Amino acid sequence: MENFTFYSPTKFVFGKGAENEAGKLVKAYGGSKVLLHFGGGSVIRSGLLDRVKASLDAENIPYIELGGVKPNPRSGLVYEGIDLCRKEGVDFILAVGGGSSIDSSKAIAAGVVYDGDFWDFYCGKPIDTALPVGTVLTIAAAGSEGSGDSVITKEEGMFKRGASGEGIRPKFSILNPELTQTLPAYQTACGITDIMAHLYERYLTNTKDVEVTDRLIEALLITMKNEGPKVIADPNNYEARANIMWAGTMAHTNSCGVGRSQDWNSHNIEHELSALYDCAHGAGLAVTMPAVFKYVMDHDEARFTQAAQRVWGKETAEEGINAFRDFLISIGMPSTLGELGGKEEDIPVLVKNLCYGDGRTGSISGFVTLDENDCTKIYQAMI
Ligand code: NZQ
Ligand code: ZN
Image (cartoon, rainbow, N blue to C red; front, side):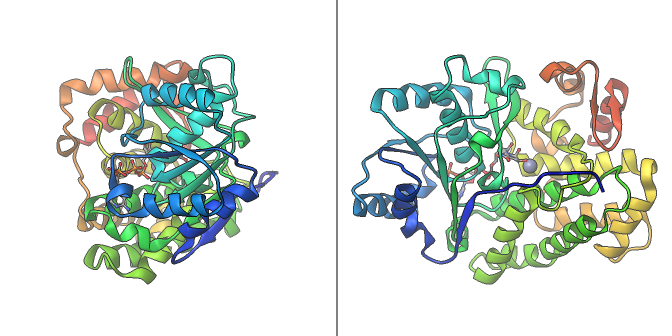
């Protein structure tokens, strides 16, 4: 195991009715004027936003609102949010929604206290300071509620890039599994896929003798394999929703990724798909992962065999990957590029943006290093 420091100071408040604590939590973390930031309207339709506002009113905390965050959140609304917060003297940002609303909130929080262009953070500058951010999560998926990461798409050129730093780790996150019961089945399945991707990206390691984190990841993967189909069959299954929600958070706080090298090639390959086709991140991952795993399997077949046997109840590495792919299809996920709106003639653009975007010089690195030729073959395998 490699040396590591693990510090994950987010306060998680979990369970039925937890959103009614939002006002008290904002107050406890020093917020005196709040930006409520949310997406395309699901939190209005469900009545959640009204409950959060009532909890702020109960603490006499003033707030302003900025809705309209799109899935794969865009830089334009971030600039708008930064200007609004400065003009209104906002000192706390409360995201109400999914990973997109949370990531957009984090970008605004970092940008408000920074003199330069917030996009600098998405070109590699670490985020050390930001306005405090809290979250009320409505979908188990991205894990942004417990991560120090944010992913934003720059409209000019549609570049989707990530930023990281302790400054944007949420001060608190409210997790009420009931709030996820209004999700369409497709979005639920996208979330399940993303959670499993966060686990696999950590499982694919070159560090030896990491039994404790291997076993933690396997436990979470098995949980997703067992609980996922239950919520697809019955969206109101609270207990299954609860298990998935906490698994989603644990999958991405990095508690099961410490002390080991990690992969993230599948995420990087997918981010080009959601940037170009504006598909859901989870759906893109469902198409990407089996293709990547088969391509890199020979690098460490024993690792894939271990997952096949311990998670999927299969004998061989390839059978394990096929079982994972079939599971994703069974919950309603796509398995081909065409289903995402992709075309074979787009592959050169995807490969160029992937291998030369983000300061890269012709390859991406993780479990294995993949050059332009490798990435072309992987995208071709998704056709
Ligand atoms: O916009 P609204 O109307 O709220 O609708 C959303 C959206 O259409 C809807 N939704 C969310 N909760 C709902 C609901 N509909 C009904 N009932 C509910 N309870 O679901 C759609 C997807 O929402 P979104 O926030 O985009 O989902 P997700 O949490 O999957 O976030 C995806 C984004 O997170 C990034 C992805 O790249 C993508 O941009 N990621 C962020 C990470 C991080 N910050 O650590 C890591 C991840 O790997 C990921 O890259
Ligand atoms: Zn993800």
